[in-house]
Structure formats: C-alpha cells, structure tokens
Length: 274
Image (cartoon, rainbow, N blue to C red; front, side):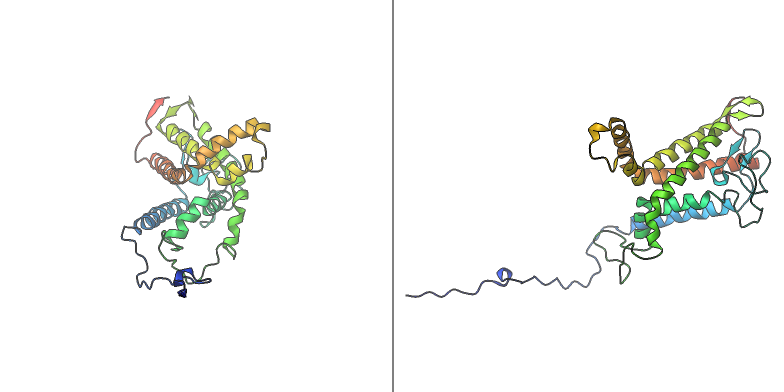
C-alpha cells in the first residue's frame, strides 16, 4: 500500500508571506490618540504667541528699583535699552524689528527646535509625522532628517554650548537682582528669577548632547570616577527631559510676566528684605 504526501499548507511554503488585511480605516485605535498632539499644538502655539508679542513690545522688561531683568530681554543690547538694564553695552540699533536680546534669542530658539524632545513634539503635533503610534503618517513620503532644513538638527550639540553660555548670563542677572540701589534686597521677584534659572540649568544639562559629552565616549567608567558620577546625575535628569522642557516654558513665561507687571506698575513686588 502506498501513501501520497499532501502539499504543505501555504503558511509553510518557502517564500510565502501572509497578505496584509484589507482594512479601510486609517487606524484601529479607538482611544483619544489625537488629544496629546492637540494639547502640544495649543501649548506650544500659545507660548510662541506670548513670547513673540513680548519680545517686540520693547518695554516693561526692567525694574530699576530691584534690578529685575526679564530673560526675554537679556542681555539688553540695543540703544533703546533703559539705563542700567544693559550689562554688555548697547551696540545694536533700535529698529523695532530687532529685539533687545537679538544675539541670544535666535540661539535659544534653535537649541529648543533641535532638542530631541521638541523634535518629537512638533513632528507629531504640527507635522503629523506620525501623530501617534499605530496612526499613519500625514505625508505621502518620508525622508527623515536627510534633507534641508532638517539637516540642521545635527547642530544641536553646538547650540547646547551657546545655551549654556546664555544660562550663565541668566544666572548673572538673577544674582545681580539681589543688589538694589538701596543695597542687598530680597523679594518675591528674586525667588522667581532664581527658580527660573535653576529650572533652565536642569533642562540644559539634562540635554542628550550634554549626557554624551560627559560620558558618551568613555570606554571604562572605573578609570573616570568623577565623570561617571556626573554622567549618572545627568542621566537621571535626562529621564525628566520632557517634563523639564515644559516646566521651563512655564517658568520663563511666569518670570517675564512678573517682571512686566512690576515694571508696568500693575502691582508691587512682595519684599522680604529691603
């Protein structure tokens, strides 16, 4: 008696691949996957609008009585700067289109635009590329960051160096604010300025580039204990990079609004000493 072997099922045949399911829907997700991109658009859009308006107001940025200077106008470099608000000279012309901090604001913007977290945020929210996991890209083609202007994302490390220098300037402004014309002074404005500087430093050094600069190329941590300790600290902060990115947007807006309000006379600074 002879037996014949039946043909193997299609799934076991060499080179066979299962066809994709014919699903008409763009995504099978039923949760509110669109909510996170929407919140990002609203949040970033509102902050950019506020910052743009404030930068081109050209007023209410300096409190002479307590030496409060908003970070949006630091360092103040145009010949429009009010007395004592400029610490590095006023060599820029006072055209309305030139911000008082024209030499620092572009680099701060580029530092944030090329930040790894912000890239994820605005790629998903403003460009829909893609808006969420398991949701199709909003574009027909995808080239990644291989074309202009996205090639500039590779300059993030160099913008980090500049952002660190600008953070030093903001730190100098916060320290200087403790010295008013009446001598040493301490008020709510000082708390806000120092809190903003602390958060800015936390966000800056939590940057992925900073983490790589400190310990990314080390082959033996045991031979570099100091750098290893610094790397572990930055790594812990790096895990909070997204939260720090949003927190610093809030502290920057709060600091600017408080200085503006005190400078405009909307309310007085709450003083604790002098």
